[in-house]
Amino acid sequence: WLTRHAQETLLKEILRTSKDRGIFLQRTVKRDSFIEKSDLKGHFELLKDVSNLASNEDRSCCYKRVNYYRIHKN
Image (tube, rainbow, N blue to C red; front, side, top):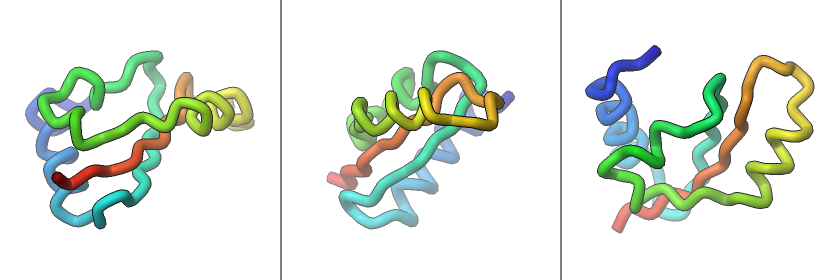
């Protein structure tokens, strides 16, 4: 539902306002993550084990994926 430009702007703001090694939680109704398609993906490290567990344990059934990312500012 976000345009590509809006997605990039959102990721830039997350990088600008977060601390290095902070955690970002993304919930998505899609199987894939727009972060993985972004030019900024190198700043977001998917925490696979935690994300898989969170996705499987999500009781709301509103989301296809719950992803946790560690932020790397440099």
